[in-house]
Length: 553
Image 1 (cartoon, rainbow, N blue to C red):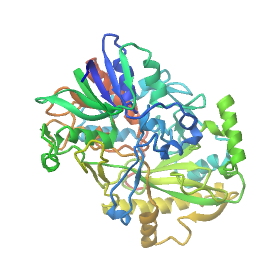
Image 2: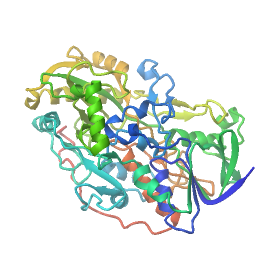
Image 3: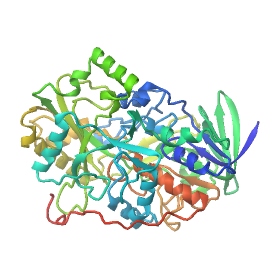
Image 4: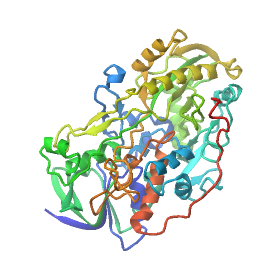
């Protein structure tokens, strides 16, 4: 068996792995290998923003995971798409760019992630980003990751923002800037009309470097150890086994599901679970695969009295025109993810910062592509941001190709039900504002008859969906915390030569979509790995609700 030597072996070419590949290979003396099980992202379905729901549901680009039957949701198995392609989930996601609330990262610091407060991470958000409107104290203007806003041409987008204002909530010019709370435009990772994945932003520009190798269709079976030091990986392609040696470090960037799975297959995890599968224990780390978190959401749908929604664009002829315009000019309806306005609000008094997120869409349709639009309508994707439910990623088998067992334990905490009921009632109030008077028809979903706690709970149990933000399954913490998996430098505690850099190491889930904070994690981790000084802290002021103890808005 041929053995190749590199300085760094990165497992996964996704949102974090692509960033690391680019940053670590900036040193021409450093040899970097990236192993990605998926293939090329050269597809119109990936690159055209409006086609986002198609690759998300294709076996070619998606690992095809689902949860175990969820007790809190009536035994439903929940869809769990994960990117299997260059760019990983950044190549199949909704392209929404939300950094999270500043308080999220101060919470990380309090949870044991020393050096990951908002002031510590803001410089890395700025380094990553090239904002279409330019940089400032909060936003980056010269990074690799381009962000932009939609044209807001459909009046329903502005109606949603105005309805939020009329309901008594603030309006924010930039939720990724000084004011997180409120209603406003939504950022997206779209550049010149194309999906701006980490593959486009980071990996592809770096692939011309002779010191960077990217191997696709490479299935990593396990991390190899000599004693307590990771020394390489065993991987397969087309039935042939390979070994890649890492002279410096193995970096696991396979995501919140595959990273804990691969650790356990390699002998790193809860000793009892590993022994049950006949896996020799390299390091007993009980936190591997635990603390799994996610966002749930439902689609609050309203029929439209005016024929101005995207329902008009659902026919074959209309889709053909949109596709042709995008292919020729990279503009029009094909060049947006259609999530162009949004909101972040607090669910009740005593909540210090937003715990409910809205994505507004001028179409009544399901995200999984199964519930096609049947009439003109619009919707808000709405859900709580800081669920207290916790799940786990466990092995179903010691066979590397077997899918893991994933149980989120959705809605297992009683507070989650309180928050979901607030989501229904507060959203209904927003859509009842005067801004929607010209457009508002009947309430399609949940339906006007869903009013009591019991009725809302039944609706949630049957209709709530994952927002596809699994995270926190190898959480970062202090070395004396038995449930922490990595330290503040992303090293696996108790082992040498092994790091984890992806959304699995978040101590707790952030407020909003996870692509932006995952990219930030990788930018900051790259400096830890390279052993260079961290970027200077940025102690900027950000707005907080002054009356949060006593008022919901």
